[in-house]
Length: 121
Length: 285
Image (cartoon, rainbow over the protein chains, first blue to last red):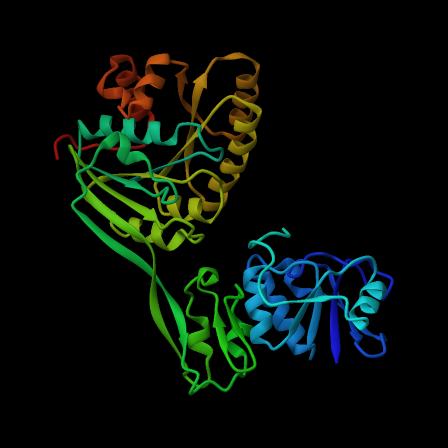
């Protein structure tokens, strides 16, 4: 499946970003092989409001089924759930390192908001 | 005739100027006072209106009929505020994000969206001595004030001279409050922050094509003021009143008493301000 990892830049070597709706990039990887499919700029970054729902919609359109984040706000959490996208917390280091943790089952699933609204602005 | 009071920087004395000016004008003609600072209305503390009516103000938000919805996603695409999200088996509406524009309802090809009212605040009215008083009170936690400000401004009585007390800043709530006025007073203070925000407010008046003048509160003279003066001169914005530091004024303010009712010197200050405004007052009401 497609796993999106919140990142500060493009590619597997990019540093992860703890924010969801305002992270600059999503690096989309094949969760089984760790191959990078693509890096897409997060359209929620420039949203005046509702960045979380906008980013969730973008990932849904990309066919993403799981996202690895640092934190998610309340709107992002329900939007991702509605889109059927699983949320994993605990990103750290680079995108590559985070994918490795995911593969080893070391990223915890998140089923509700971990921060208040507008936490990452 | 509508005179708006705005400021750029907060806490410079908008409400002090608005309430005292309104009281001075009310000695001559019929005055209506609209407190459009709906996030923190405070003019009622000084004017003490007898609020006789209170009505809720709402914005229309979408309700989606999932029986008719085909999850096509057009509603989410047209929403500029990300207030609606189409999921796999559900459609989420983030009501606090919705600006009530009706775009989703209009564009839904299945006619699956209807609108329901979501209250955002209340509109309260009543007489305050010789004045007719209206204010909006935004519900706590609500982010969207312009629709409520619009509702307050709908009550404008063309037969009266209307004073509009705006919110601080220069963003949407201020634009909503002051647009359509005939004149705008900008209340400032002679500090670097005051000047910085005054410049932004003057730029806003230019964009709205609104004539205006400046009131300097807590005036001490000195260098900060010289800079402000030269800026106003350069922009062709007149300085209409300098309000001196005055312990008595502060003390009355703290007790919720309008200065013009107690201090003859301040009655004179505001009468002098009125004389400089482009207001034609027909004596009597």
